[in-house]
Image (cartoon, rainbow over all chains, first blue to last red; front, side, top):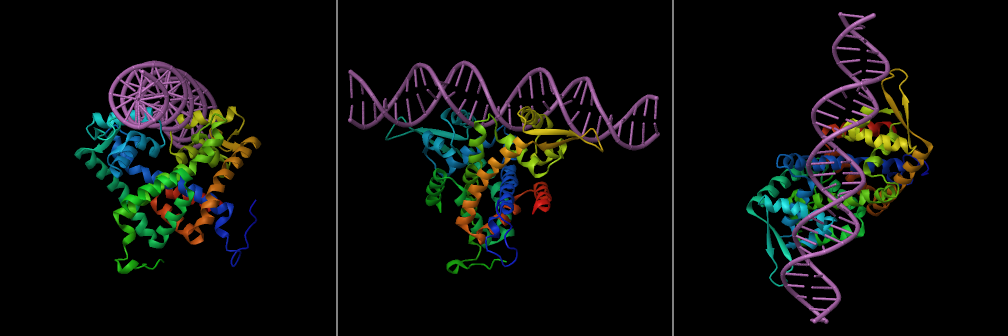
Length: 168
Length: 168
DNA sequence: ACAATAAGTCAGCCTTGTTGACATTCCAAG
DNA sequence: CTTGGAATGTCAACAAGGCTGACTTATTGT
């Protein structure tokens, strides 16, 4: 596959060789490990995991979101999500409010304590991201985001853009 | 590299705002989902999961690697890895050879069938990566890789570079 | 009145990670 | 030659966090 691309002064498609693609794949694998390492460490001491982090993140991002909404965003079943939500509510991190217009809906909010944990988690993750951004520079960052967005499947991209539209 | 793009008379550090960092975090989350979706689908029909994919990938990358080596690379315990390896061996995808110099070591290789599955998996993943690369362009790809590398922790970066050194 | 929707819950299963304990095999040093 | 330690394998038990299926409750809209 993929013929050796005329080196130096070649086709301009050197970035599409299997070798380059493989490096990208491995970079994603190792980078994602770093990406999740800090929050994982913080949550460990509280007997929580990545699932709780994700829920906290998106409740923070979209306060008042419903359970169905969150299910779609996280891509898990309501049973899975419910287990996590129960833990968060029991720990006093998340508060549930019955919908005013539609009282079947449960609207999710972070409590003060939940918001504090969210800040702790996202500070840790942002610190790593900030360091990486600073090292790589703004042009690289723009490219980073472009490639990631192109890598999402359509559903995820829609959700990502809907979120992005809200806050930035 | 990367001249500050002085966006609309700003500070030149607009890419380091919390908002930008948050977008990067969410982009990683959604992109990683897309990144793993295709191989997951393929493996589902064979009653295997992501763990098997990772083992296959790195055995392909470093034929003859030992169990200890693979453990360090994947960041899991030998018990976890062993369960996966047993399944792969039973399925005839991986072959174990006793070390010649040190006969305590087990050197891992893909069988023909294992190599075929590896190709199927990496083709699927590469296709998505290739499409993303093509959409984003070579400059973006360079930036993508720079940011990912800067995001790894030191151990991972060492492993990544050791691999990259071999084949690319 | 009734069907559909949002949510919660129970039960059971799977994958993939973890510890701990222990056996085997082998190399190398004393 | 014996013995310590390294590399590997294996058994058991457990937990997190996914999943499906079946069912209930409350509420809404037709």
